[in-house]
Length: 167
Image (tube, rainbow, N blue to C red; front, side):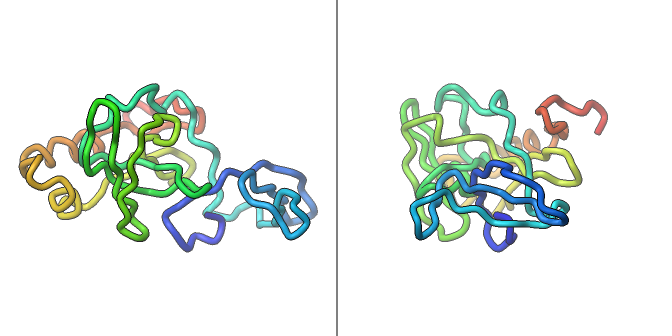
């Protein structure tokens, strides 16, 4: 979100640069003339980030674990969330902004949760108390610790998604 107000993101395409303004076209939203909505932002806006590299996404739903942070595509927006339940053909995601649970059956609508921080991708790690509350009674405190440790220990990644070893 270019304004930084919410834990969500929109898909945009770079249109042009006009002086100190970067013109971006939203791929999901239209203006009053039914044309793609275009807005200007400062090129150094800290809330603008590159697209998450596609290869970091997963081809099916089987790889998502309860307690893991994800981005879920719903209502034309990518929302930050936490996997509350994971089964062979469905993942239930708790959306952080409004605590709504979204049922996902299409893996294209889900991706691992990363934040763009100081020009690298870092795995977003939730609060342990949130994960315990969402996954009760399925996961023990030790299970949650292991999931959180795995996300915390994931190496930061460059813009192209390649791992930064020792970073």
